Length: 393
Ligand code: TGC
Ligand code: FAD
Image 1 (cartoon, rainbow, N blue to C red):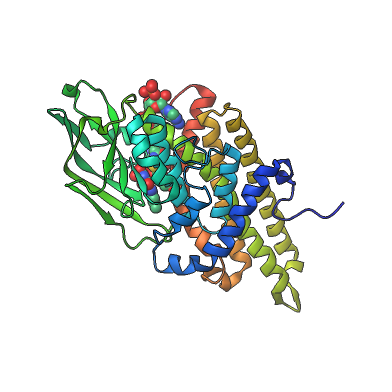
Image 2 (cartoon, protein in one colour):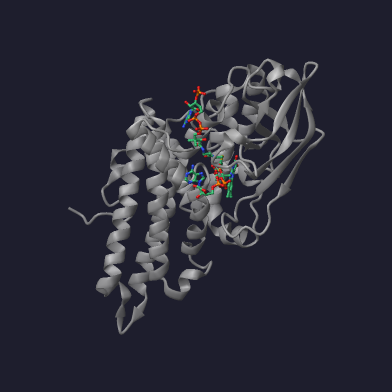
């Protein structure tokens, strides 16, 4: 038997179908050829050009696991593999695809009216139109139920006032899915979702500057000042946190796969560096202390890969519980951050530069640990599933 492939030590990908392997290879080839050569420059200059959307759309990666309206309609495992291969280059790229497909497009696909879907989804699938997802506010992060953004009725219209914080792609978006508390007098209770064209009067997006993490991604504050929308701008059939949380399940699923890619990239960089770098007259890979790091990293990367593959199959069988998504998001992001930190030490001083991907992944993963539910929120979600007791408040 041949020695195991370090990046797929347990041959997890051997279980993929031929179609899934083709998708994996197509995304890996595209990302390596088109995105990897420019990622350090985007990261350093804290930018991500809008035109990457067209290439990602042409590959079918935007709203990839949604059916109809120009979306590719692949299975969940294929979507996970795409996230893995994009995040192997940079978490910002996976974030771009997550926000477009799993948050903005999924919200419209799952909860929008027929008119919302026809207006937005085909153009979003090609990358011609971009979306963002506004749930978090400056004072309402882990506890989105405490949001202050309000939607009140004025005749048939809705009028939105408030602000959202940390919104990925907010300055690029043509359409924002905005979640707001509705006025009890409006005859609709609780949080509702609104489809807000970003050229609506009263809507502004301000870029968050000076980020030290996820720099190849644009993050914004959204301000809504008397944004007037027609009656049919609201998602018709969902109220309460169930609406936005259903979308978060989709994006968290992509993240638990993506983290495997970031971890694999760090591990492969460390392995290759350790083989080449010589100190005390021999490759540092020959020292026992380095080999322990390599062995611990290969175990972590491949355990995360197994977790993602299993959760993918559960999702494809429509048997995935949100607590299992929390398991994967918590375990895989934690593992990826550990791998990134260990890989960084193997690279010594070179580990802190942009010449290698490791430090970039490491700083990105600090965001990935926090967004889409912090590690603590997922710990408590698992705790609730185990005990039936909610310990959030
Ligand atoms: P709680 O009372 O537990 O639940 C309210 C309603 O929601 C339902 N629900 C879910 N539905 C679907 N999926 C889930 N995972 C769900 N969790 C709960 C629940 O059944 C209930 O439904 P109903 O019909 O009875 O009303 O709500 P809570 O206020 O106690 O909060 C629970 C908690 C803390 C788990 C939730 O608020 C939470 O997940 N907080 C974290 C917030 C978060 O993750 N924000 C992410 C913002 S988006 C983002 O970060 C994008 S990053 C960009 C990128 O992805 O790249
Ligand atoms: P807080 O909720 O204030 O948490 C601070 C600390 O307190 C954390 O450690 C948390 O775990 C802990 N904590 C809070 N409550 C409890 C508790 N009950 N028990 C124990 N510990 C607790 N949001 C969007 O809506 N859309 C986006 O596109 C988006 N993109 C993002 C992009 C970036 C780069 C970043 C950094 C964030 C983004 N977010 C987005 C927001 C993200 O989801 C929030 O940052 C996250 O949910 C945490 O909220 P917070 O930052 O307000 O932290």
